Image (tube, rainbow, N blue to C red; front, side, top):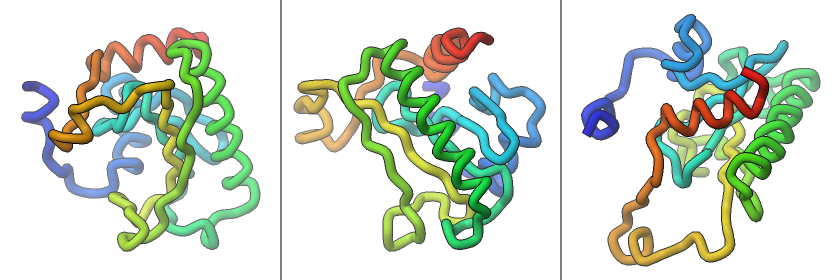
Length: 151
């Protein structure tokens, strides 16, 4: 219920807010680097759904620098290796939804989704009920992944 009750939109950009919050665990920021950061998706498709986002508030690939893009992709690599080790993911959906028509829920701050996948991970819940069941709380996922990265 805490998860459902918290589903509201805070003012401003969720990525910028997370960077400025000062409490990485509360804002679900797993790792910070020079040009980007890794954050848990608060409304995940699967357990361990992460996003690698540029630090700067830009909405398109064309607005980023080559350093920012390289850093974002470096964190995508960190995310996949960490998720493979901790959750034994069999594969990943990795992608950018740029623009509302392309499916971007947050279109003004560029981010890359990293969604872990497992053989047979689709069951009747998303197919028939159009809902997803997550087996662990976000805080548990955060702690597992954060400890895997060395704290």
